[in-house]
Length: 194
Image 1 (spheres, one colour):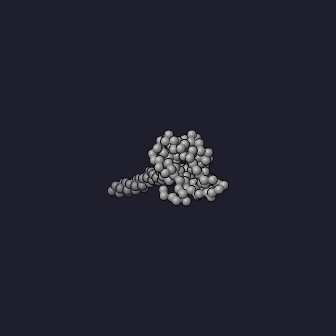
Image 2 (spheres, one colour):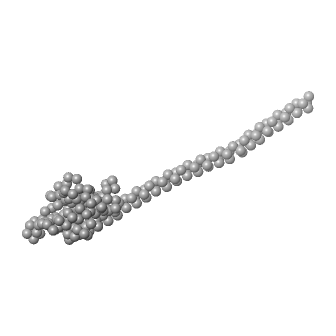
Image 3 (cartoon, rainbow, N blue to C red):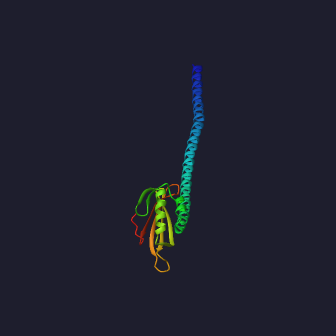
């Protein structure tokens, strides 16, 4: 019987040792798995944060480029407007055709949806009979709205700048996406109805 009790004690000790070793084995297996999982989770989280920051930086660069591009285009259109006004002052209808789109939505008072050829005829007619001369160009502002660029000009006209006072005028010129003029209108006394 004594042998049997020793045997039972021995089995119990072995079972306790096995429990401890199984516990240590479970810890040894589980802990690295948890650490790997935690590392992968943290790595994925950092990857998402980096992607978000990269997307944010790209968006900011795109916006900055767009703003710079618009400012450059506005400056180019301002120069184009000044050149147009210089050619207009010389009353050369052939040279003015370069500035116009194929069809103008509006040209001064009574010409609407007209092709360039009709505009040339109107200019030839008025340049021969014009009683007013462009005296000065005070300011040019080019403004962008919904990808539409519009130049606003303050100008002065006079029948004869030596005898008569000049008349202030306000002029609006609209451009298409190719930088060609599609709309020209002027107003007396800086009255704006557009």
